[in-house]
Image (cartoon, rainbow, N blue to C red; front, side, top):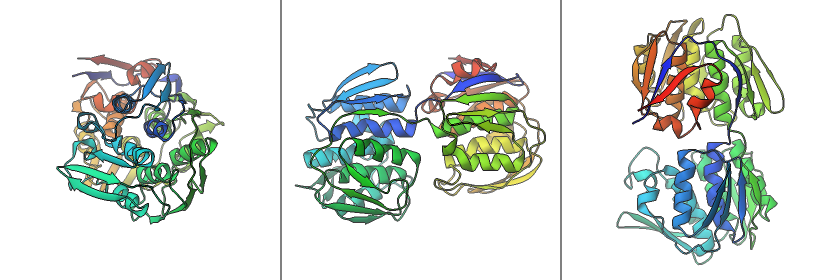
Length: 419
């Protein structure tokens, strides 16, 4: 299994380009199922989730041409209404294929996404099932498979009891080809949702309100094929900005959209992190003393849970005590124990809150990346730490950050990928 070997304390500088958004690319691939015409997707990140999505598309009968960060997908030959369990088990966003297949073929069969057993707690798909039922679909569970059918989907009203990004996106896609008007309430407002609606509208859909809590979709007979460009990854943008701040480095982040991380930039203003921004770039500058600042994660446009982990690392270098509260995912702060092993002064108040006292010196350790976002945080911590850190299970990091080691080397980081 590959691992990163990182020697900390190196001076970082230069430019780093942001790739296409993971959470946009993995959604736009199943969008191709809504049309019989060819869809071209540009600025596609070369990450594991994209490869798994393409594997599932091919199994469904799609023809795919791959270029340099570009895809051409034609689903005229869609010949299956069942998601292959061996593929769907590998990634949770396989559930995003369900709505388009249901809208296109009138029925779909699939296992619980990501390999979890039906009924398991953690990341259930109840909202998806309830949403399909609101559009007139029948949902059944047989032999550990979901069976969803509808002779013709019909527009309806649906209110999300939990604000869900993928749930909102799934309902937008599914309702596009339904008869009548669908109104969605308490919708997520992430930029990836706006990007989805913008593309579908350009191909004949009638969607209004994307980026607000209420979205209205008027069903249409046909969605055309067209060209879609994946938006810059705002989580990668924020991760690199936090890396620059934590290492006190001057780094220019290009091909990004600073407007997508305004909450983080407002915090930088408060704690003394220096930066400049333009339409598609962010220049992180060296700063003096950084102040501690309490944080609570929140749905967009609040502070993203995916940036919580690298923010905790920054707070280990800040002066004072900060309370970090995770409100989106249970147990997502447990990784902070690894920072304590590196010398950080962190108190676990409960599974949802940690108190970070800084600044503290960090020391190299042998670590295992538990997930994508904790993984990038451990990389940042290793760049600060004294000595050489080994981070195992970097498959998790590769899922969200394309060729991270190659890009960080160009900034001067002493990072190697090894077996």
